[in-house]
Image 1 (cartoon, helix red, strand yellow):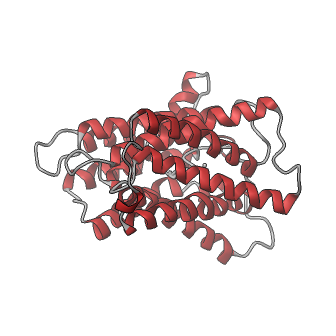
Image 2: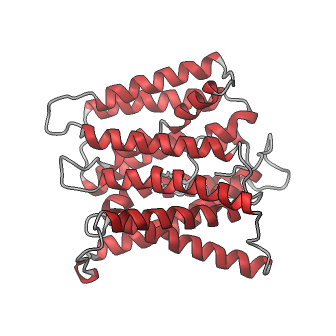
Length: 339
């Protein structure tokens, strides 16, 4: 999930600064597209990274380590660049960031990690997880509607199309390559947690700086994930020597590529590119995830996956393209994730 920090993600991403209506003068198009490519590929690849990491690492324990390490690195960088007061926030802002972090990272990303762990037939393929998480913008629109906002008719049409795709994707087919229903529902609950966290982040008092907010979100999410990992007995008898090199590499990749590089590129884009362009990550990431899963992990891409995924992506594209800039922070709230 990416997810902003993918969680993170996706995501991956929760305080979204106001984006300019167009690219500021002097910003090289090559830089914009380079940053956008990083977000497309790195956030899209975090779903496969999660699958490889949980092959031999404790699911929630590895997620806790990922966000704790990424948060610590980001905190150190901010402290060195901005001085002693770089991370100073009000108590209320700290509480808000912690709440959002728990919803996004422990609820959103943690449930995706759990869904991708387990034996074949139980674990959700990484590409399917990415397609399910792609419903986050649709869920945010529903939350806005429930609180009195009135999205455009075409936005609601996009939500309807997207959820039809969701049903098509998880509909039992009876074949060996059918999407595991329990795992799929787990991802959907994670997407709901991510949506609620993203929705609240624009309506409660958060730290003004998105990097500072992310530090506290990561620490809060990592703390809850660590408690849950201990509660599930994940660390009982854990032997680091039994962890494969692929899982260690995947965890390092998630920390650096998913939680630091892609997020930095995303925040930079919010200040230097039109929000309509930045928001395209919401429907490009799933396509990247499905392709990488098929190429590098031999995940099956059935006709049902292609049809359901295409309908979901079409719905999300319709929502993103019809939203006004004022609605962009909510619609683009799949920011990680690390996803």
